[in-house]
Each structure stands twice: as C-alpha cells, then as structure tokens.
Image (cartoon, rainbow, N blue to C red):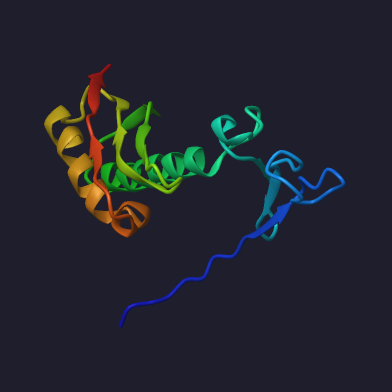
Length: 156
C-alpha cells in the first residue's frame, strides 16, 4: 500500500502599501512563505511583473525545487550503487512561455549537474544514475513539462 505524506506552507502577502489592490501599481508583490519549524522564505513576483528582484519568485522556486529533488535522489542512488560523490553543483534553468492573455506555462526545465566522483567510482554508472534520479524525483513526476538533465561527471 502506498504511503501518504503531507506538507504545509503558509503564504502571507506583505505588500499592502496602504491602498491594497486599488490599482495594479498601488501594491507590492512581496510575500512570506512559512513552513512549520523552518526559516521564512521571502518572495515576490518576477521583476517583469513589478516584483522585487532581491526576493525569490515562484518561477525561481519551481526550478530550484526540481534541481534539489533531482540532486537528493541522485545522491541516494549513488550511495546505494557505490558511486562516491564528493561535489555536486547544478546550474538549472527553465523556459516559461508567456501567452498574450497574461497566462503562461513552463515549456521545460534543464538541469546541468556538475558531479565530482572519487577515482575508484565508475563514471558510466555515475552518469546513468541521472536517468533513474529523474524518474524517481517527486517534483519532476508532478509537472506537465519535460525536465531534461545534461550531467557532467568529473573523476578525481
């Protein structure tokens, strides 16, 4: 039987500048994300939509969630397959198509993990485990667009 896990977050708009949403330019797009027992994440809209460039926007967070989920599954798979990872960094990006009516959707996200493995680890296995990590990632399995991965493996 499948198990179920629940996750909760509270998103609180903090951008009322005194007039609420009286007009498109009278309010800020800032919000706080809180999850029980964790630090607050300070968010805003993308600056293209009058957001604060110093805060994370939902699009940033989606790309980061996909990258982090892939990495965590990859590290697990490496550990159980005797591939010793000593460093991991991903330069991920997403392509969002904005439609004329103001709606939009992600077309794809590309992960570019740079993985360093110990010299006695198999580089071929290290590379192949990215496919399995992609198939296992809860977040990637939940989106309706492709999540591509183009890993680089370095042995030291």
